[in-house]
Amino acid sequence: MALAFFFLFISITLGITFWAARRTRTTEHFYAAGRSISAGQNGFALAGDYMSAASFLGIAGLVSTTGFDGLIYSTGWLVGWPVVLFLIAEPLRNLGKYTFADVVALRLRAVPVRIAAALGTLATVVFYLIAQMVGAGSLIRMLFDIPFEAAVALTGAAMIVYVLFGGMLATTWVQIVKAGLLLGGATALGLLVLARFDFDPTRLFAAAAEKYGDAVLAPGKLVSSPLEAVSLGMALMFGTAGLPHILMRFYTVPEARAARSSVFYATGLIGYFYLMTFVLGFGAMVLVGPDAIRAADAGGNMAAPLLAELLGGTPFLGFISAVAFATILAVVAGLTLSGAAALSHDLWVNVVRSGRSESDEELRVARFATVALGVLAIALGISLEGQNVAFMVALAFAIAASANFPALVLAIFWPRLTTAGAVASMVTGTLVTVLLIWLSPTIQVDVLNHASAWFPLKNPALVTIPLSFAMGIVVSLLRPEPEAEARFRALARQMHLGHEEP
Amino acid sequence: MTERDAALELLASRRARVAGALTAAVMAVYFGFILLIAFAKPLLATKLAPGLSLGIALGAAVIVISWLSTWVYVRWANRHYDAALDELRK
Image (tube, rainbow over all chains, first blue to last red; front, side, top):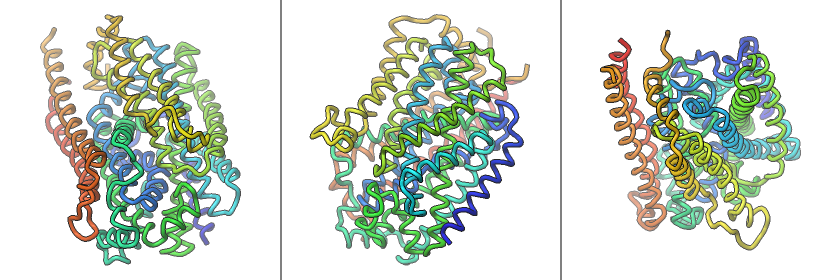
């Protein structure tokens, strides 16, 4: 029964993919869905892209095993959206074409900027992909009772097919369908939980406190030091505005006004969903119990599916698992697409071919890049079994917030940014963040079993975001680039008014 | 500098001010919350009602306030910013 629901959903989404595939003809379609998506549709698609396995499986798992601490992720992942709206969305839509590097490169020397931006994009995408693969692997292993490795490989293969044949249009429709399903599924699950507590969330929280102590309703061990809390908070808040697959969505709408409205819709949908994670997480804690959740998956990722099985039996488990799997598949497809765009649009066409490539060739390179990224994600996903996916995605956010966000904000708002400054900011942001994650307790203590780590913080954003901004500013001030500043003035009109008809 | 350039520059700085102020407001709300988590754990454990700690109430409030801030910006932009852009397009 669970499997029947599961396959029903997979066949529906594959149907959408093939329908869209017949309409993917040009690069414009492959990356930007022909700029034909409405604000409401894009709001759902943004929400779909954003509400990943980390949100559904990861946060529910963290809340069910640690209580209040998991909610730090729920709030942090929402506050990034106002930042995207206020600072990024409209200028991005008006200045760029397919990737965020378009905007940074616009008034600087394109080749070095695109190489640096592709580095940041790929690092973010790969970390993000690993987390989704681990979530999918845990889920499929539990559902089908097959080995973790096979489960991850299966997800990866389905993902490659999605992106390869459908491109952005199919990915957008999958996101919209999936956002609806995920919100519906989470609502149904939430209502089933609340029905046991007279539809009063505080009685649910009180039950959790009664069973596991008042401590579960207050901050606890997860963020052990104040610096740790602030660092995680910075990664979550500024990471959103540096996520390549989210930024890419603003090119699928016809104009800046639609980009603006779509963020408002997306924030509402995502906010509602994160409020629901309060109920799902505490519901799983009280009804399933932290020990049973940890027994099913060391990272706690199976809390929501276990809760579904308890409350609605096998059919509901099948439904929620299908929703979770589709969620992962869709997010992974969006991520792969933005990684493919970085490789083919930013590196191949604009660097290797100096912008003189045919659209056909760019599309071929993008499809090749899709396969390569898929295979890489499968390999890395298999090696990181048993980590909590919300925590791992927070590391991807730290990279996005340090590598992409500072350069993008400086490019949009600061006339004196130079090519060297932008490159220094992006390269430092990427490399130092990855290095500090490697030196952090997560890798050194948890994975490599060393006694201590060189770098104390689990999430390095507190150090790397200011460092990346400082590099961009200092390097720019050391050697001014008058042409870049002159072009900033010239582009001011396009930044506000968009591409104008000649 | 032409009159249109001057008007555009004025509009650009107005948008930057609104965007900057709203960003600062959301940051103040969120990092206020994070700093409470970091430095005032006992305070956040205070019970407002049975089952409702101050921490959970504030967490929910942060989500709602963030969403309202996007509504404030969209309303401002749709009314004032877009109107000024239409003027510039003429």
